[in-house]
Length: 282
Length: 190
Image 1 (cartoon, rainbow over the protein chains, first blue to last red):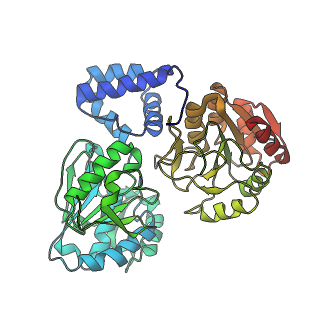
Image 2: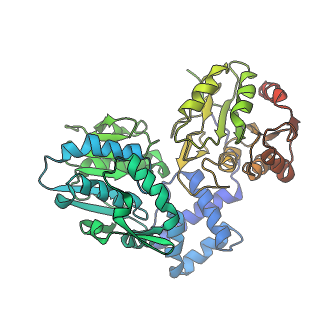
Image 3: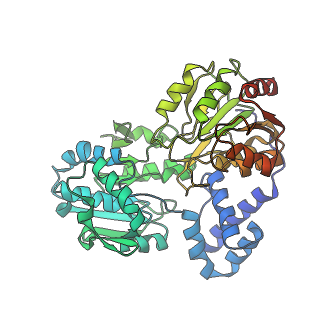
């Protein structure tokens, strides 16, 4: 044990504890296993954005105003991504994983923590180009209903189109990204056809169970927000959900080294953070 | 095998930062009894090249800060690109892809504020050359918790905006030429 002197907690740290407890007791959302430093920063940003004087003031509001919970939860989940974010990862999926998925007559893919849908649509495009889309059922889940609704729309700011287009090509896209959207003023709307096999659903990794026997799980930059304990719970859930030999793709900087359940996965492409469920698990 | 750090030095820089970092790191003494954590905005997708360059003239081991890993004494940890880097209360790193702060990710403010909470007075923070005002709020948080503030003299900085913004908002315990920064850190750690 390392000896870290424990000072008397700052008022703000006590307020954060009480805020988390209130959300949990009153509304059933459990953020106690979120890494604290980034969570605290997000809470303090919300306090400022919503015009409260302190965390306690915001806690008071959430206790008595049910209508405040949805915007609060939306603010706490802060979905940020790009289409084909880290193109090398999508290239690796296309080149190292898709050929192995071709042998299955039907495929389930689960994207856990889909935010606004940037990555699930990216995946849909690559599946289509690989000739796998027709046989695939994609589940895109998130615990934030507002984000799910946005994801379902498939509308993104037009200013992102150039970046997405460059990413698409770097990911090994076979055509032109512009084939997949219609530009409308300030926005691009992705081709409706891309979501015919996508089901958007609410699933909370903190509390919900096994899901859909997937051949591939994409969960990038979600576990970075979780403590070791919760990370291990979610990895166990992924292991138990995946088919034998199923694939797991994590975010570029995520590590399995601190979770006992990490031992149930073997690396396929370490750099792209693509793993496979080990064939046996105890 | 290094030990978990009881003290830390956090360093933030942007435009012109590579040159400045090399000078500072070259002046640090081996087996420094503190962990060093560096945020340098590079704009590239990974910091492998930056780590490689910094290793060349630094007596301490340099590597990318790993998710969930402990801060180690006598080690230079470099923030990965594309993520904010935080120090948790138990002195381990965590990452987020939360929106950019001051138009950048990693943000110096994010690192400094979390470091201030984890290390309080056992923290020294350095703001060097850069073209925006990232780091100013962070430096103020460091001082508020009793940490030491070191700012590169803006007159000498390749891009003076960042050290100047830090001085204006937070002030400093030391305003130094680049060559004086490492000796200040060496003495502070002693």
